[in-house]
Length: 208
Image 1 (cartoon, rainbow, N blue to C red):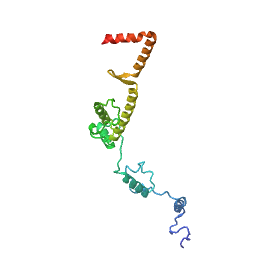
Image 2 (tube, one colour):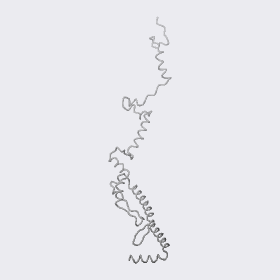
Image 3 (cartoon, rainbow, N blue to C red):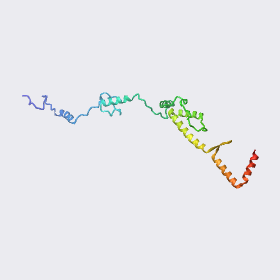
Image 4 (cartoon, rainbow, N blue to C red):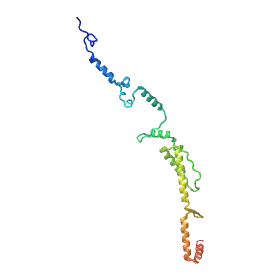
């Protein structure tokens, strides 16, 4: 007589499947962790644990970031050299900013409207061109600096020039000298009285 069939013995071999079904059921109820998309093509590579890739949760996000980065490639940009970089790096940087090839590339024209007697040295202009080229200034920067410096110098010169007067035979004489002279003459006159004119005539005859 065959053994009595048990509902739990689905195989007919008397094996209880209760224990084998439990893990599967628990996994379904608890939910399994979604696989890391990097596992499919980066596993066992140096890129797998790269921090820059760990922020992407799916291939679409990674592809989008790649396209955005690719769009930036080739666009003009300047990187400031450091003190450790060779002069050639600085030359490239200054050239990109607009510095001419040589100091002679700066066109500096003597500004109009300067005081007539104000000195203007072409030699100093040449020295400034050399300095401007050395520190990487563009032609526009040089032009603005020259205009500003010249205007300031003209103001100072005009103020200085206002302290002098033109005297025949003497040229420019400080106004203060004239004022001091006039005061001295007035004092001399008041002290000598009528004798002043007589003394001046004698002095004039003596120097003739």
